[in-house]
Amino acid sequence: MLFRSKAVVACLDDCGKFIASILGEMGDPSVIPKLIPYITGEDDYFGNCAGHSVGKLGDDSTVPLLIEIIENDKTRDRMPSARALGALETIGSPKAVPFVTKLLKDPSIDIRYQAIRVLGNCGDKKQVPDILPFLKDKDCVIRSTTIAVIATLDKDATFPIVKYRKS
Image (cartoon, rainbow, N blue to C red; front, side, top):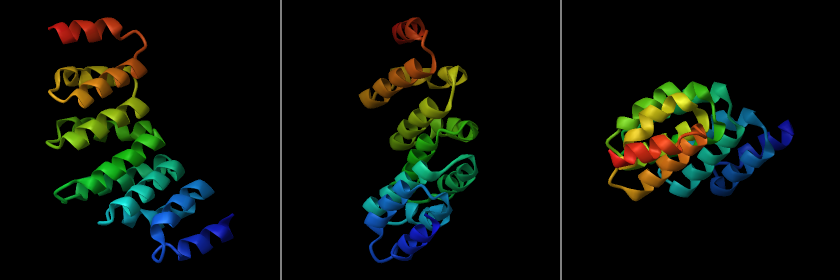
């Protein structure tokens, strides 16, 4: 497996879009450092493939690398942050929760949306109060995602959701 991974990584710059996807399927986490720079690249498809593969291969040790991408993202569209958040969601590590909770106040709707999704996969009932205000968000995608995440985090949340929406 390791030899095959090294051979595939060698092709990354030439045919990266497809290789980035393949690496995620090969199951070799040693390729993560080679994929991380592509998450911050300008090519959306390549970046998305790299982020997806890092999410599939990553674990708790990958979380700081992804947080660093988000903290250093100065792009206008914040795509590197969105890709890193997608990887964090797939990894599902509770280590991401304190940082991601802060992103609920981000000015970008895309980042807030991704943060809610990450909390749904990484968090627990303790995150429900942090995301309850999004039940009143003006964006219907944010509202519906929030309902789904609350239902995932707290199976008994039907009453709090109805009560919060009416207030």
